[in-house]
Length: 142
Image: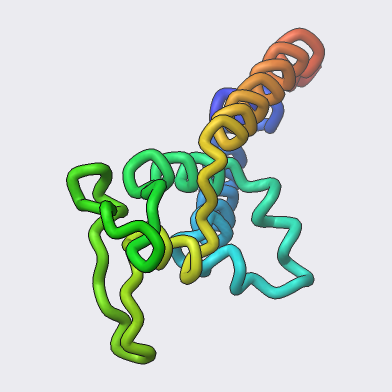
C-alpha cells in the first residue's frame, strides 16, 4: 500500500501524510478500538473496506476459536483451544467461553478463509494500482 501511495502521489511527504491518515482510520474501524457491531450505521461501510479488520478477525479466530460450548458440551476443555477456557460473567452468572465472549462483545466470526481471501484481494488490487501507476503516472515537471 505504501509503495502504491509513493508512486501515485506527487511527493513522499504527501504519501506519508496520506498513509498516516489511512493507518489511523484502519485502526479505528478494524474492531479493536471500537467493536465492529458498535460502529454507527453511517460508518458501517468503513468496517468492510478496512483490510486490518480482516487480518485481525482471522488472527483472533485462529487463536481463540472453540468448536464446543460449555453449556451444551461438557467435554469442552482448554486443551482444545485457548478460546475454550470458560469463565463466569459477573452480570448474569452465566458460564461462557472466551470465544463466545469475543463473538458477543466484539463481533468476531470464524470465517478465516473469507478473511484471508479478502486480504489477498486487497494486496492484488494494490499491486495492480502500483503497476498501473508506475507505467502511466509521471510527476516530472517539464
